[in-house]
Image (cartoon, rainbow, N blue to C red):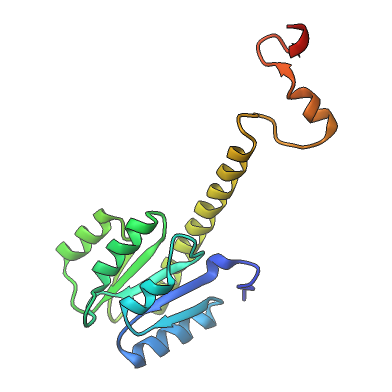
Amino acid sequence: MTDTAADPARLVALVEDDADLRASTAQLLRLAGFAVQPFADAPTALAVLDAAFPGVVISDVRMPGLSGIDLFRTLHARDAELPVILITGHGDVDMAVDALKAGVWDFLTKPFAADALIAAVERAAHARALALENRRLQALAQDRAGSALIGTSPRSAACATWCPRCVMPISTC
C-alpha cells in the first residue's frame, strides 16, 4: 500500500449521488491505497476542487442538479490537466466518445470491474503527478529569470556571468 501523504496524487475525489455505491467505491479505492474524498453531489465537490487539487476526480454522469459531464466541463475550465474519470450506468458509445474527445481521462460503464477502475485511477494519478511536477519545474525555471543554469553554488553563479556565445566572462567579451 502506498502512503498517500507522501504521494498526494493518490488522492481521489469521488462524486456519486448513490450513497451505497459511493461507500463501496470509496472502500475499493482505499483498499487499493488511495485516499478518498467522497462527495454526494457536484456543487459540493466544485466548492472544494480547484486547479491545485493534487489528485484524480471520479464522477457519476447522471446526478440530480449538476451532471458529471457539467462537473467535468467546469473542472476542465479550471485545469485542463486534472484527470476526470466518468462512470455511468446509462452511457452509450456516442456519450463516451464525446466525453473522451472533450478531455475526460476515462469513461467506465456500471457495473465496472474493480481492477478496471483501479487501473484507470493508477494511470490518471501518475499523469497528474507528472503534470504537477512539470508545473513546479516550470515555475522554478521562471523564478530563475532566463538563466539556463540549474544550481546555486558559487561556481555555477560565476558561470552565469559568462557570455554563452564565446564562453568568456561577459566583462571581457
